Image (cartoon, rainbow, N blue to C red):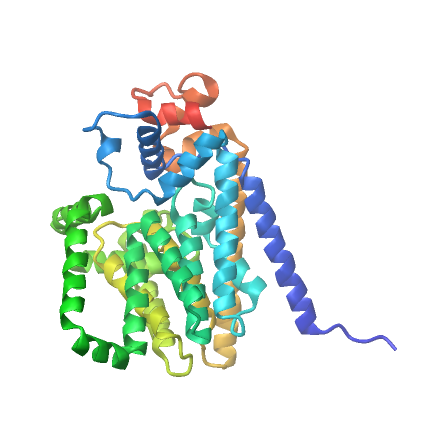
Length: 422
């Protein structure tokens, strides 16, 4: 007698196939030419400054970027492999490793292949995994820190706490926003051991006060190295250009772009302000549902996860620039939390969820196809990479001269980066 196929097994097979397909696409994208971004050029310039020297007053010497990602570029340079393929390949490893850490943190609450696939089909990951930028390195070390801190809370072994702190420090040195992760761990430690700490403080007031003074002094002395001074100056200057309500609108629009799985600019170009407000409204609704899910008693997320997301949101909602890329460092965590949320079990909501997944996956597949096509079509890539900002530099690098009759300017630093590292 023939047995009927198990629908759940069939579903698992489809999800596994989807994961390995998108992983294969990511591997294919490793063969892309070097994808320039304004921050990519800065990272390479800082690396060159450290490796070969530069004037003390140059942009690279005074750049405020932390050195965590530059160290990776420097190591690859010393090994003679600082080219696009190794950089993109390690980005893929960083992403898969980070997602594995987060899956293990929520092991019994997430379906691994579904979780991996949803994250990797997001247009922001499809796009930025193929760029030499620090986001994937940050994701790996920050999610590793979260995993080992979770292990510490479960097993109470000091080795897990020390490893978590080490990974959090590397994440912080990769991107300064990692201070939110350090703060979340500190808050959780204070809460878990508040009674012991109160007793310790009462017995050692002078010692604790002295340590706090030393920490504050070190932060002041090394504020330039950590980029604190620069970030403060940037915030003060740009707050004048981006008032609070505008920044809040940007953040909700970015959440709409992330969860719809498409950038909003094309839609806004066609329907003007109505499209922007639609993304804002959708982002507000999703953000509200997300926060309800995060703080719902039913889900019981650990305090340090809640604190990390809250601290990160506070910084982002005050950051006076508009770019969904700023959410990349916490998007895997956002996805893991969203997958544990609930919606009403009515037929209408089930249909809405199925429709949403179909749109999300379709747009993700389109983004993946777009990246593969641009990776192997130099003319197309030159016109469209970074919205065509570096078209003249790419065409000069690929074809010996700009292909546009209107070309007037070539950025020597961008061209030198391509000539040297592509």
